Amino acid sequence: MGMMQAERKGEAAATPSLYASHVKVQPRAVSGPVRRAKWTVLFLLLGLYYAVPWLRWNRGPGVPDQAVLADMAHARLFLGPIEIWPQEVYYLVGLLILAAIGLFAATSLFGRVWCGFACPQTVWTDLFMWVERKVEGDRNARIKLDAGPRDAAWWRKKAAKHAAWLTIAMATGGAWIMYFNDAPTVTREMLTGEASLTVYGFFALFTGTTWLLAGGAREQVCTYMCPWPRIQGAMLDENSLVVSYREWRGERRGKPSDATAGDCVDCKACVHVCPTGIDIRDGQQLECIGCGLCIDACDDVMGRLGREKGLIAFETLSNLAASAAATKGMEPGPARRAAGMAARTAPRFLRVRTLIYAGALGAVAAVMLGAWVMRETLTISVLPDRAPLFVRLSDGGIRNAYTLKLANKLREGGTLTLEIRGPADLSLMVPEAPHDPQGRPLLHARPDAIASYRAFVSAPPTLHLPERVEVTFRLLDAEGRVQASATSAFLGPRP
Image 1 (tube, rainbow, N blue to C red):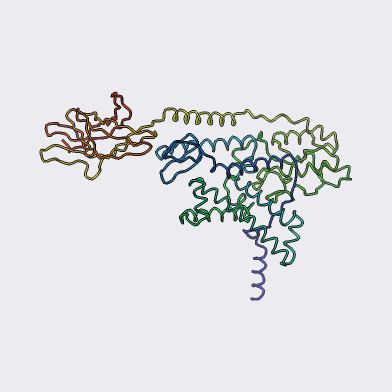
Image 2 (tube, one colour):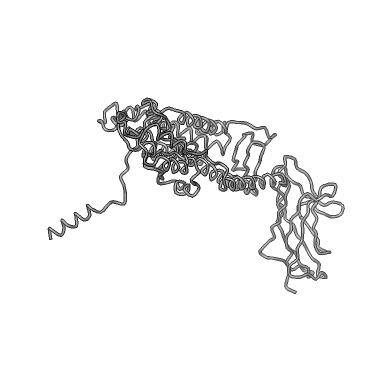
């Protein structure tokens, strides 16, 4: 029995676990052209995010003057001079389609440039790691701090770091709330305790998620939570520019003094600066976000060793294959580097895949522009009653009831004449509306609002109609021009 238990324990120990323990990634600070580009993008995107809710746009009296506002109370989306109503949600769908195709095109051209430079997770994580380095020190200092005792210095630094993180997270959550409420007003209400529980609830939600994802989860979001790493492989081809290690030049790895070794000295600088903790020398990996910080780290080492930079670079897979083929069997040295670089060709940005993306972007943009140019500022919708479908009147006639909704997207109101087009002898009545001399209802289109009316259409008993007939409701201006129309059905009993 004891031997059997020992065997089972041995088998259990030999069975690999399906779950790997989390290893904390402690990236080192790095400087260089790529890092400067990332800082530029970070400051630009964060500046826009925090500043846009405070920009004003004069739309006239009685209308919010915030340039970008999702006005949930009045069901409007304001984007500068553009005002989108709930019925026009297809514009938002078009914007999302444009963004998706643009992301596909950017990935096809430059790999995971979105993930490495512009993704909110990357941007806020970069900011949080900068704060962490300022408080706790660079990589080695942080590793030493985490491995050391939990003394007063440890608690002081951790408290200062999390306080700074929480401040940034609160600013982030507060700014998000401002996109749905007037920024000055909601800021004052939140500071004085006058805001609603909904506002405080969403503020706490976005504050907490920012602190958790950017401060705690970090690379775990990119590796396990985000679906894009598993999708972007289908967007790439052999001509996409991606962060790559030029193995044909770097191998065999050796010490700087070894003249028979390649350019890679196995210093692991590329690993130490990687925000996801991978080794780019292992090739294309799901965890790589394409940030390019390993390029700056490697170039710094090559520069200090007096060697040509570019051992890690933005490169195409086709060029990597061509360089490897051209240098096969060559000894490390200047001749091999020259042969490998000479085998490269300029990246081809115009190719079938990218042209398809460009065409799709142009087509969607043209459709959206055309839809906006032909956008109706006054619409009428007709909703027939369903219970009952029709009513038999005392004189034997048939009556249908409808709800009319007039959506006026202009700031000016007006009075319009309602008429019905269909079989002769149909009569139209709107009880709450006045009538013109011809007996037609006069409806008021409220400025920048939806007006609702009840309408009744009746057929006399002498009019014999099929079970269903189309009728058209038309709104006419003072000159008799049709401003809006909608078609519905007039229902009756089966003949």
